[in-house]
Amino acid sequence: MRLGLLVLAMVWAAGAASGQELPGSREFLTDYEIDVLRERQDIKLRLEAYSKFAALRLELVEQLLAKPEPGRGAKVHRSLSEYSSIIEAIDDVIDDALLRNRDVSKALSGVLEAEQRFAARLARIAGEPQDDAWRYQFVLEDAIDITRDSAELLAEDLGARKGKLLVDEEQQRRRNLESMAPERRKEEQRAAQKEADEEAERDRKRPSLLRPGEKLGSKGR
Image 1 (tube, rainbow, N blue to C red):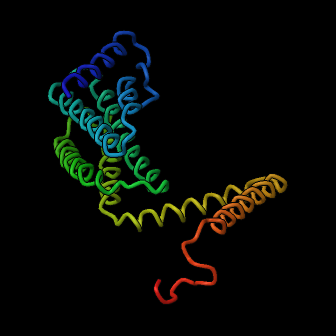
Image 2: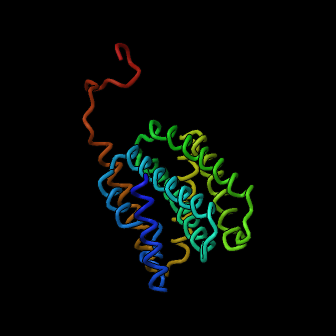
Image 3: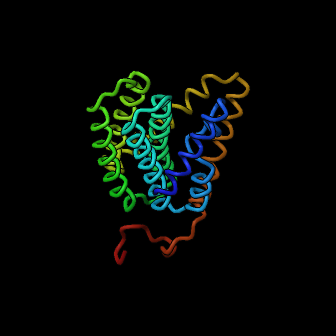
């Protein structure tokens, strides 16, 4: 954790010294963190990595607020913004896994505990207003809301969460179709129908253990 914090501090220092936009300022992860995620394809390990990155941002915020310095408000703003993006990325990873029918149940308890700790840390930050708080007040409130919403999702029944995702996905698909030109819409509909027909054909051809003429629910089954 300390090494990661040092890397972030060095990135800040480089940006301040050059007077230019900080390297990777349009990204919410460092190059090192991106490399870490590439190596962690397992859902549990990936979520643990994201949680560590989020904790790192809050630690940096707390260290910055412990001592006044020029430009501190902008740095706090940046770190809180990155923190929020990381929490949203956690939600996206879980949603994607659910839609792909991957088991995430064993990974969620640790993430929920982490986000509960994050919520407490953010509350303490909000409860100690600083002279330059106006520079980061909005993103702090946003971070608190995002953390609360994410924790509520983590505590939600996974089946219900997946059901909502499927409904949202279907509604988005329909909106996309409606926005297409007529010919393009017909092509998409034909492709969807073809895929459905192929899936039905695969189901029909799947081997059965039933004897000829035997039906499910008959004696001995």
